[in-house]
Image 1 (cartoon, rainbow, N blue to C red):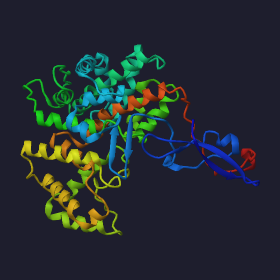
Image 2 (spheres, rainbow, N blue to C red; image 1 turned 90 degrees about the horizontal axis):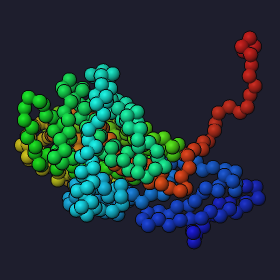
Image 3 (cartoon, one colour; image 1 turned 120 degrees about the vertical axis):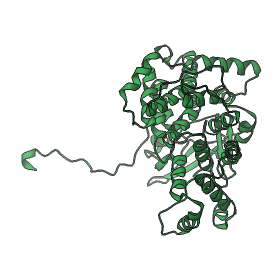
Image 4 (tube, rainbow, N blue to C red; image 1 turned 135 degrees about the horizontal axis):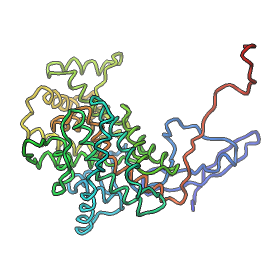
Length: 431
């Protein structure tokens, strides 16, 4: 029960209506306006839902002012430094870190689900070879519900768990198949004795004619990228998954809805946009000109990968990704290529130039992840696919939390109607 209330004064009689206020374990208090329409006959107006809590959640917490990101209470820096992606998956799904036996059992279960139904291979032939990988992934993931009928009862906790395992396990396989199909190479089956990220890299880059050699530094870098992107509170794609799930839609359809939302350039395309910018700048000699353009308020050019909508101080994920990015560049000995020289010089300027420092326009996770993915050999059109792969565990965790909520309701936002008032139909001959 709430021990505080908020009051609204409304109507010609200035009637006072009280609403309960609930405390959060972290972050802002929340005013429960569930009864507003019934009590006063009015709704709130909040475009983008920037001041509206649409759900209760125990999964992820962000404090943008302080640069804090917590998964189930654990700081992202600690998880990225000390954990691996499958352990983080277990944490997000179950709420606690696994012990050794639990981790081994979880990894075994995921490995046992990495294969996709053989008919899904044929499904790819319906797409053009030059289709965007996100378009293919969207279609294939949505189609999974046509292949796995035995885990579609959302009221059954065991079905929900199996669906989660399948999605986490099969997304790397599907993502790699999207890439292989786009370049005309044969699909590579998963190999379950490899780690999650290493297995994905093998499915992406190995060919039947050559032996594949794992690189521990590159696999660890990709594993960190997965961890850093695993969840991010109630963002657009996560909210889409929850809204779709509120209708009772199956989990595969809900994750496909999340992929569709993530595909939007304002959401999942930031690291690709950052790399496009680096390619436009081309050489370190061009940097001063582009910096001047970025500082000019009358110029439409903006430096991508600096600052963040949520994090007003610094992006905690960027601190981890910066270290990882430099490890990869050093391991591959490619610091001296023009693209990476541009990136490193821009990084130096952003951390030292008063224009950027005073505005807290620090390099964010998209800046470093875009550079790192490029160094790993992953093409730009696969960047958002990688994002979707990593975010799947967050989506399915949020979906499962919503389905388990006894107060769940179908999503039904209200509107401020500004269209015509009632009018009568006029027959065609009289118009």
